[in-house]
Amino acid sequence: GAVVSQHPSRVICKSGTSVKIECRSLDFQATTMFWYRQFPKQSLMLMATSNEGSKATYEQGVEKDKFLINHASLTLSTLTVTSAHPEDSSFYICSASYKTSGGVVGNEQFFGPGTRLTVL
Amino acid sequence: AQSVTQLDSQVPVFEEAPVELRCNYSSSVSVYLFWYVQYPNQGLQLLLKYLSGSTLVKGINGFEAEFNKSQTSFHLRKPSVHISDTAEYFCAVMGNNDMRFGAGTRLTVKP
Image 1 (cartoon, rainbow over the protein chains, first blue to last red):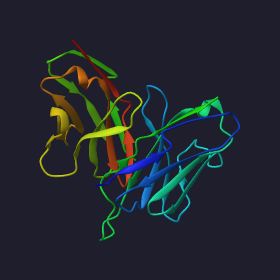
Image 2 (cartoon, one colour):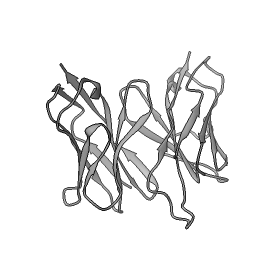
Image 3 (cartoon, rainbow over the protein chains, first blue to last red):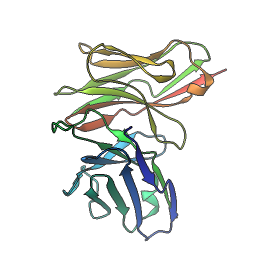
Image 4 (cartoon, rainbow over the protein chains, first blue to last red):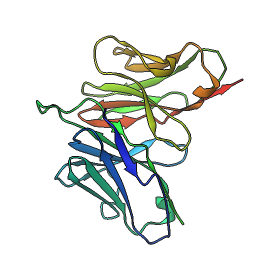
């Protein structure tokens, strides 16, 4: 259980175009989803946190107008990289957590397999 | 907020030798602790986690970790490593639904 998928797994685009990455929780309702980016040989850095039906909360230094996050349902969140540039090339990983029936936030996050974005 | 320090960026070790990857954390709230492994061009795979209970946690692939609250540590150990254990290892701490990662430790197992 607690499987998270991402699509696409790999995308190459031209500079100036927009790219949408989907993150889905396959067998649970994800009340909170997280987006991370990982540069080569570096750790994961949290970009933003989104709760279903609410606006995403962005980490300091992350441009909310460039990285559009939508969490319209309990199983789907999307990250759109607008007007992508080569410096946006990175590995983007989403994760999801859930609330128990009692409303308690789950005690771990479940990670997707990641999306490799290359901007030419 | 919480933070994680992985004390070694690289750990080279010979096959069948024991290994310890060190992780220290700081937090003002109760936390949950995790170790993940990442192979090249892949996502994260959960090795083990400490949520509560016994401080010695056993995970997959023969790894284990011990939660030490007084030393705020969660070191990862394996008694005998294989070539296939070569990968990047991340320690993570989660508190208040906020997960933070260490910088990672590159484990290289040599024949």
